[in-house]
Image 1 (cartoon, rainbow, N blue to C red):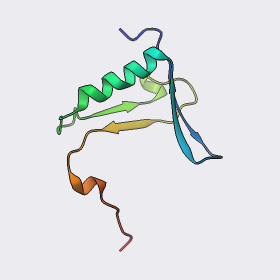
Image 2: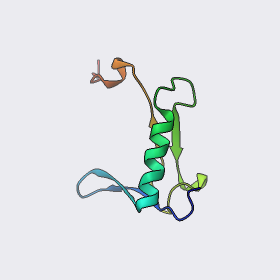
Image 3: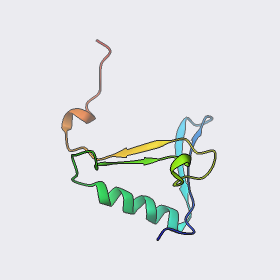
Image 4: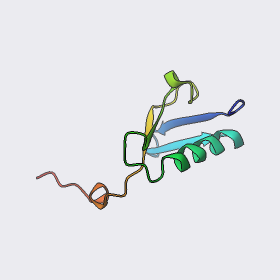
Length: 80
């Protein structure tokens, strides 16, 4: 289904940004993964991206995309 897609996640140390790059099929694959987890609060509400799962290009950094509708997940955490 996703043959020919390219998806890579890297950390640009100069700008301190995470860069997600992909060809057309790669970005469509990422969008499809995100769409599939929306609303799922059980363990299926997340997706792992890593070279070992063969869904990221070599030299990518592993990533997890999660769904959450819990407002507490979006609060700034203090170091108290």
